[in-house]
Picture 1 (cartoon, rainbow, N blue to C red):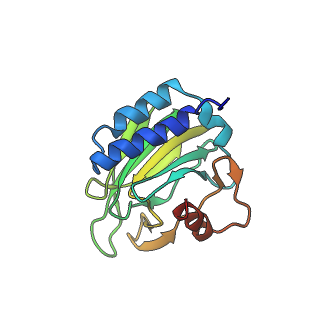
Picture 2 (picture 1 turned 45 degrees about the vertical axis):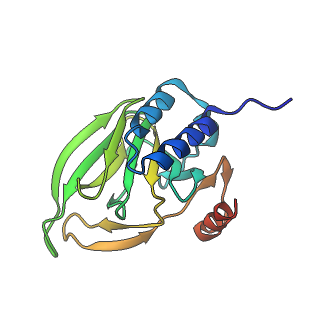
Length: 196
């Protein structure tokens, strides 16, 4: 007898189908919203770290990368772009906040835009032509968010809000499908997924 398929694995199959037909993924937000509102199997694949938010890999293919990010209260990402890719964020546990920024030019400070708060089940979308952004847990509570990048992002640019200076950042993983990475590099994790 086969074990029943996890809701998170079903979501990955649905995302593969949808993104295979429509690379801009107009139906992606609806899939993520439904999963975030109705399911809870993500909890067993989520880790937290007092020093930084965690990036927990669920699935990676040439079409997309799906991660669960675990945030202790008050933790925030750097201000960053998405290397030209599409990004959706569904809140699994929250609330979570997103702050938009605009680059005024080399050597100029960033201009802060809207601050939005998202509750469990709500979905945000960002692309570089919209804005740079920072994602953060509120000071009062832990947060968990589900991030879909289409296509996968191996590096992005982070920005200093005062100088506007950008730096290239290689992104990695804290865990893969519920197993801590330890000393395993992001490159070796990506190589393993490419072989699947």
